[in-house]
Image (tube, rainbow, N blue to C red):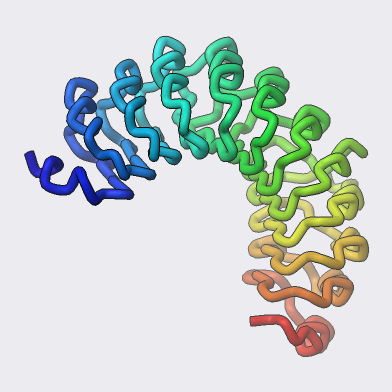
Length: 278
């Protein structure tokens, strides 16, 4: 009954941790201005999401931490206007994911949570979502360097998170196909000690890069080819002062996280010359 009071004016509705159930989703159908719906940590399974299909204004749906499985893919796909989706894939199979990508080709943003079951074989199905520009695969720890050529078939990508995956830093030349990518997170990855990350310099459009808490980052020479970079996270990388001098090759930095790095006089002198730093 309380929801009825606000149904004509609500644009964003967060029902996280509420007792909403599949049966009560029908009560939302008259929220004809609703654009964003958050159902995180509820008892929703997705089996009756089609009750929301009449809300043509709904473009963002967050289904983090719910029990979503293959059987619920058709009802989710009935929401034709969804452009941004966050989905718990713990109980989703590769075939279920393939069906989702085929049926929801209009997605622009896809965040996959509880993604420990995702491996490289899932990624080719993303090519069905032609205009996908935001993809979060964080902590899908079965993904490795062979994922990069598969992601390179997503030329519309602008924002990509591979943090917490098994990427080792041996980036293939295919990485350069992501010509529109402006934000990349590789935080919490463990690189092979021999990797210099030189291939990152192929990302000419990159503006934001996170290497926070990455293991075995030994050189920043790749920055010499990334003149558009505006923000970088190097927290907990323990880079020495001598390596940090490479920051000078990115004159447009507005934000640099050097927490727990070995910042010395040389780095401080370099930073003092960066007029754009906030």
